[in-house]
Length: 113
Image (cartoon, rainbow, N blue to C red):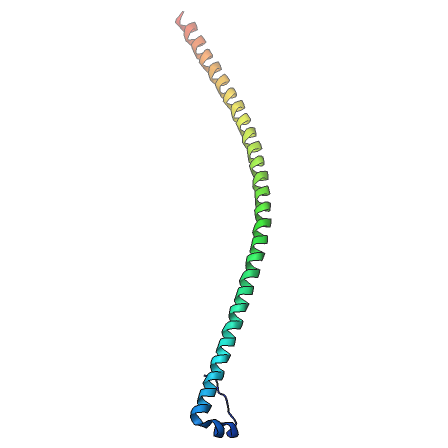
């Protein structure tokens, strides 16, 4: 509770009970004003925060969407290059295998005669 001094003249006119009631009334009014100020400030802060977040989110989402699109297209290009390289090496492997099998069969039939 806040300390409020009531002048002696006013205290004599109001009496002790009246002075105490006046102090209580003033303290209640101050608390109400303080609560109202806090409530209004919180509402303004929340409204401003929501506005800023919505701006930030819209900008960030747009940037993020663009970046994801770019990265996915780069990834697709890299995957197609890798796929082509894989097919090339598979072809080389199978040609080599066919050559080795042909040589083995040729040697086998040559020695069998």
